[in-house]
Figure 1 (cartoon, rainbow, N blue to C red):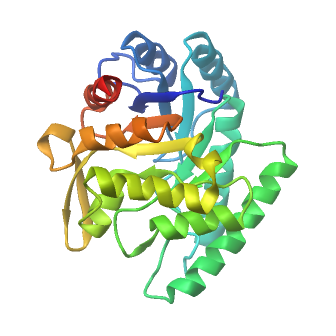
Figure 2: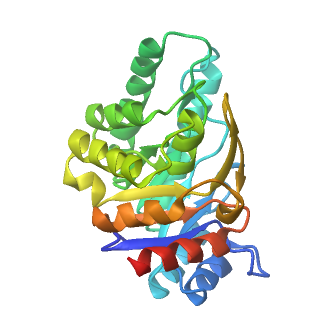
Length: 277
């Protein structure tokens, strides 16, 4: 299901749901007045195809757009070939199950630099991504495959890197985590800087990217080395209201997934701020 406007939702089943399963999560998201939910496969892809079909049916019934987050244990630049093979499988498995559920998009943290030349790392990751997309296309899996902007300079995932991957590999667009960009740079926290990010995306990838956004948001604690941990928006320095204004002014479409410690509270907070503009 492709979003036709900008939707707000949660990273996983909302806290308010007594049943922690994804089926109950979809219904709770709808009852809260939200419109999207990310399936959290961060500890492994353990959803069966049968359950994925049920979750997809529940999402369609409740008008909830689904996305999925791949496992944390992904590194397409590992020095160990077995880890690269396992990483590829984890991305493929995430995409397969998400596709069965009718999801719009999947995201993951692509790689660590491991002290290596960033240019060579980029080329290695690009090669793996091309093979992944080609194999998924061969299986008829057509959802968006999205490397995420990451919160530390030791990881591949700057805005420029994710844009370039999207230019170089078909069926790929960035998942833009604005909290990560803020933590990674110590900047990117004003209306003008948010507009600059959206303008850079449009310049690199055309209007299509702004009409197919997959966004992660939370407050964030960070140091000179980047991300430390997520915070609730109102307990952080993040100027989320200015970001919502930039979203409205650029008329973007897609999903905004709250990854804060109180996922639904901040999803609703962002939705309310967005609707004021």
